[in-house]
Amino acid sequence: PPQFHPEGDVFVHTLLLLENLPQPAPMTLAWGALLHDVGKPATFRVAPDRIRFDGHVDVGVKMADEILHQLRFSNHDCQQILALIANHMRFADVQRMKESTLKKFIRMPAFEEHLELHRMDCLSSHRDLTSYDFTREKMASLPPEAVRPLPLITGADLIAADYRPGPIFKEILGSVEDGQLEGRLTSKEETMQFVREQFPL
Image (cartoon, rainbow, N blue to C red; front, side):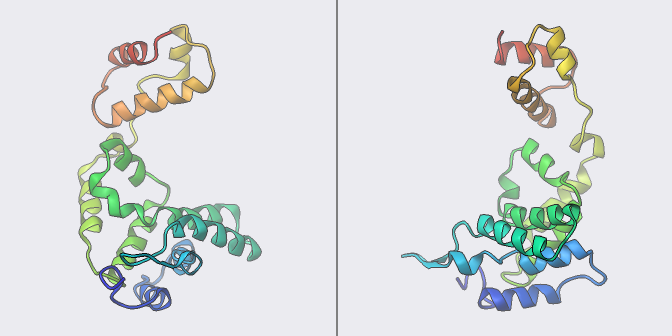
């Protein structure tokens, strides 16, 4: 649709995006840029309101996975390229993300590549860099320990509190991490109190 892609179709968009590729560029970023919208032709449909490509990210990840394995990319490179494709639309929600979600987002491996792909994507379409600028400013304002803090508790602490090891540990520790990233939990003592209240034995 013109309001999202005034430059034209996905082929023109991809060509323009590749023109914005920094030189030199990481190989994974280059392939992520080339394949980021590969799922759009297969998901094209004309809806009452506009042309849509619902599910193009998931379809694109599957298609790219097949292409990359046929070309014998390493598992490490495949994972990064597929992550670029899988996450490239998430920047649309970055200003509405919970603090914990945003911090987990920006601590993904090689996040600078995700950010650069988003910048190129914007410049080759609507040219609105609001989400890019917001993310850059957020990254600059957060010290590393705020994005990736040391855990307040571990599985050993749960066992010591009479919790039985199992799938519930992942849920508990994930909930604790969210609370820590959002600043609601700051000490081991209040964290264990939180666990007892939210996950009673």
